[in-house]
Amino acid sequence: MISARELRKSYGKTEALRGVGFEVGHGELFGIIGPDGAGKTTLFRVLATLILADSGSARVDGLDVVADYEEIRKRIGYMPGRFSLYQDLTVEENLEFFATVFDVDVDANYGLISDIYERLAPFKNRRAGALSGGMKQKLALSCALIHKPTVLFLDEPTTGVDPVSRKEFWEMLKRLKAAGVTILVSTPYMDEAALCDRVALMQGGRFLDIDTPAGIVANYRHELWAIRARRMSRLLGDLRAQPETLSCFAFGDAHHLAAKPGALSPESLVRRLKSLGHEDVAVERLQPGIEDCFLDLSAADGRTR
Ligand code: ADP
Image 1 (tube, rainbow, N blue to C red):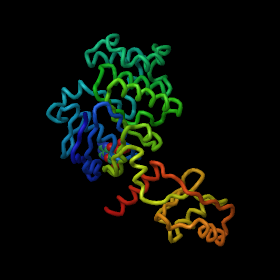
Image 2 (cartoon, rainbow, N blue to C red):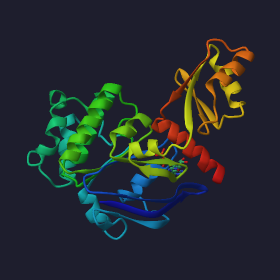
Image 3 (spheres, rainbow, N blue to C red):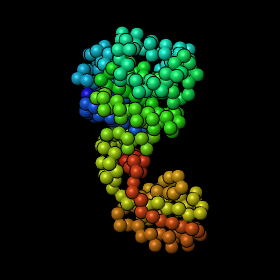
């Protein structure tokens, strides 16, 4: 449903896309996971036919993003990062407006959005500008779906939205996927990767890896350890200086240390840390998460540039 090859796009000296290629199958929920500035929005704009790439090619629902842009626009739903709502229009007026743009009837197309919109119905006369982040997000999604698109592009739909609304939002995406909609969604939240069928980890205008969330974690090449001690900030520096450390990052209440398989002996490390004056040292093996994989791939990418 979506395919891209060697997409490149620069803004002056900034290379926002540096050769991006991937394919998304029919009915797939595909995530683009990456921090601010990774190039996610630029990629979405190229695929949604809003800007032209400098080179490379892309197709959406079998159509070329340059030659067939008008037809693509009729078939896709696009929810930009800062939700594209008219703040002075009410909830109901926003929905009517988007339906008019696509020349469709709200009632006739209500089926696809009913379970999303019914949560908004009690607020249908409220101005969009006066809605909470979570409700804006639901309204923006309803507006992006009102013409029954075959492909949905959601650019950071959960950024700045409260955790409960984020969870509800992903539940809605699952139902849309079950209804046959192909979904490309971007997020800076690594924990949302697990909710996608497949993900691309993106940084610096490139994909570092494309796989299922389980596949990405299974490809992690090192042994990962969680290490705690009383003085965590001093511990980070001391851990980074140990010979078996490949990388070490602060992660919530523990530091995550990557080492070559078999290279780290917990007893020996604890002894050394104690001799450096650390107290209450704890060292445990850890299964990597998507964020560990991202940091590792990103460091490897940095070394090869
Ligand atoms: P993301 O959505 O992952 O945050 P973007 O695609 O918005 O990434 O940005 C990728 C890079 O391109 C960033 O360095 C950003 O500053 C730059 N960029 C994006 N849009 C423009 C623009 N219109 N003019 C100049 N630079 C831009």
